Length: 174
Image (cartoon, rainbow, N blue to C red; front, side, top):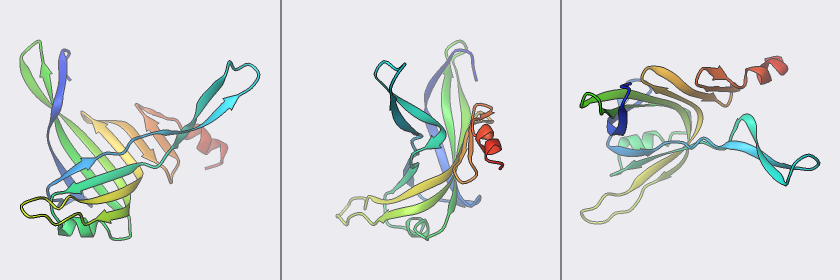
């Protein structure tokens, strides 16, 4: 990444299912990563602390908003896990050189269908159809480096080179 980078925008992206199928025209709302937490209070604590639980996250939802009813909408509704890969090119403007660099961002998920919204029929409009999915796995790579990897079913919680669930797996004999 350039030293004087101004992180500008996502220039373009593609979506693949199972490694090779390009999905149709859609906007994607990526998952939020929110830690599970529990409020603690008592002696030695001045009030309350909403203490996050190491490596445990809330539900991670993914939404795909389609412009029309299509085969991809219905295929992602099949009651099974779907492997999706979103590949983006992010524009970074280097203020020192005046050049715009494209930095790759790749997000891979394994997701289970939760809802399929067919949307609405209205003349000369999009149907606003939507798939809502639950992610059990996510991997975020930025400029060729893995930055986040969460595998809820394998107890993996990797951020910037550290697997924060390693000690927990070891304590459990896994």
